Length: 443
Image (cartoon, rainbow, N blue to C red; front, side):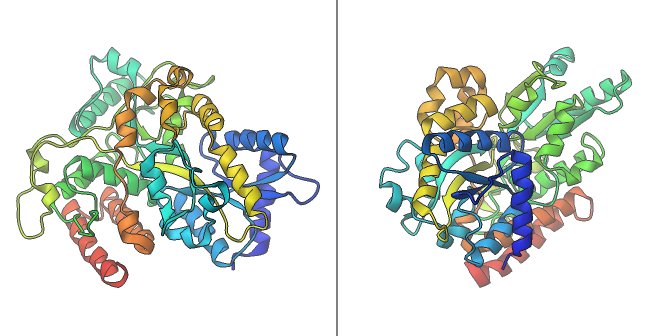
């Protein structure tokens, strides 16, 4: 069981941070993330629901690392704990946590998810039960210093090789001009779920498959996947600081927003913060789809018994990992109907529009991508619409309960390549062996 004193301490700390503590027990408790403006926007939405209903809510801030947050949730739910009523869950968790979550269609009606992207609704439906409502969706995007690219005569890169060359050129020129802290590219390189997202983008964009395909085939052991990881490893200490090996989203944003990086891979939420007052890069940032691996060249597969069909040559394409978060209700909540009402409110049209405008959080309601106020606040929502609706899913559906072990093996081995302890070729061979062992036991 998750220790009661610890969960109480977390709740107390969050209440102090949020200014949302109650003199007496609240009617509900909700867990919110605290990456970027997440916690502030959650507080505001909860406050609006409290004012509309007269009920009270305590906000629990959970770890920013999705890996650590999942572990916390699993311990709480496995203990049938009533400590958290509404949980903010990652798009890859419905299958892992579904047995502990309320069927929202039973409480809110069969049209509870009407208007949301069908693919996300399907993702959140486990065994015919709607275990979560979409709150915001995500896909990885490339941020760039538009002023610096213009100054040095470059267009945004279309391939990872172009990004490498442009980043090195501008980094070196800026350092020579006196900015010794300038880096070419920052991303999420810590050994956690964020690196799974980054590495999946590199590999898929090289034509190296998606780690585990929809039919359960383990596709990672191929030359294109190895080449993608090797290219990423070449960035460390060159165009990326060595510290990137411990960066999550916020560390990468801090460097870029402080004016010390040419490129950054991150989620759309970073846009609003980069454009905020006090940002060193306000008005100097552009956003485009992530690069692809190029055609042929060093990434071309050479054939052989262990080559994936995905690595059979041809033109490569940009790949963005599907992200996003949902709201779910614990089956152990003492107030399930009230909790479901809070979820419906927070995931509704008005709240999603407010969050899109104020925080650049991608709506899961298709209609909001034609909303003039939303597009004025975040222009790339319209320009990159196809990127968001066609993002590459992590293999959580096909691997089921084993996904945590699959992702852990993937990000750990990818981190080994980035840190120089393995080559890409060795890493993909090791991954195939490790994932085959997990597959035999679990799916």
